[in-house]
Image (cartoon, rainbow, N blue to C red; front, side, top):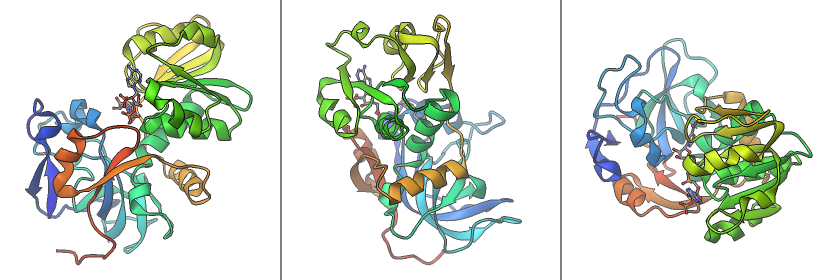
Amino acid sequence: MQAITVRDRDAGVGGLTLTDLPYPHAAENDVIVRVHAAGFTPGELDWPATWTDRAGRDRTPSVPGHELSGVVVELGYGTTGLTVGQRVFGLTDWARNGSLAEYTAVEARNLAPLAADIDHTVAAALPISGLTAWQGLFDHARLTTGQTVLIHGAAGSVGSIAVQLAREVGAHVIGTGRAAARDVVLGLGAQAFLDLDTDSWESVGEVDVVFDVIGGDVLERSTALVRPGGTLVTIAAPPAVQPKNGRAVFFVVEPDRAQLVTLAQRLRDGRLKPLVGAVRPLAETADAMARRRGPGRTIIQVAQDREPERP
Ligand SMILES: NC(=O)c1ccc[n+]([C@@H]2O[C@H](COP(=O)([O-])OP(=O)(O)OC[C@H]3O[C@@H](n4cnc5c(N)ncnc54)[C@H](OP(=O)(O)O)[C@@H]3O)[C@@H](O)[C@H]2O)c1
């Protein structure tokens, strides 16, 4: 089968290479998914699990990409809950070969059923961004109706979903980003927009929740904006400073089938719209990522609608 692999940590997205690989093995509780569409986060090339397995052993050439939408073609020993022929979407394991491949082996519990009327290219844009936004806002920050949330990078993949989910729950949403992101962020439903390059941060006042995807100086300066009892949640890096009388949390997104089901319902009824940018074929992955420009997640279309035969 064809897959994108990486071998060289220093090569960046230029190292994403089309390669012939053996069809994957379905272990216990796995499924093999025929991948129709996949998402790739450039930051993956800095993640340890891209290069080593859980025991720390080199696993290159490895297949990156950790979100997918596709069809189950095989069940592993003892796998229940999903069936051959079922449309699914979700996360692949961080330390195993991922979704930039015609077929991939995934633990079934990391996937959720996908309704026939949701396009694979849209569903593939949701697992990482959707689960990260959901877990950050609701599991870690406990955002509720009437609270104010400041969402950094609000036109990005994670931020744009966070804005929509926070509005749905009845929060007051302030989005941030570069000047060009203003219309997108307000169009997603944010009540206010802050240009991180030119606007004064202090004008925002204290907020109940800060959701940070940028890190560095943005993360550090945000600490002072957290109201007593509030939460700063970041997906960029562990924070060096804690808010006064509040808390700061860094986390890595976890697979969660129930949350994927919830997100898919919102896709179907139109409450949630992931921003999809370019849709490019597997062979053009390196070029697609090099030319990537926001807003909108670049999606790699691996298979067309026709179901190919298993090799
Ligand atoms: N811990 C986790 O579980 C987890 C999960 C998912 C993602 N992540 C990480 O979180 C980060 C964001 O992911 P993403 O997929 O949302 O990325 P993305 O789609 O590139 O979105 C990031 C957004 O932030 C904006 N931005 C970045 N730096 C900025 C700055 N200095 N000033 C103003 N705006 C700025 C970007 O604008 P431009 O496009 O104009 O630069 C973009 O709109 C990545 O580093 C990713 O690896 C972590």
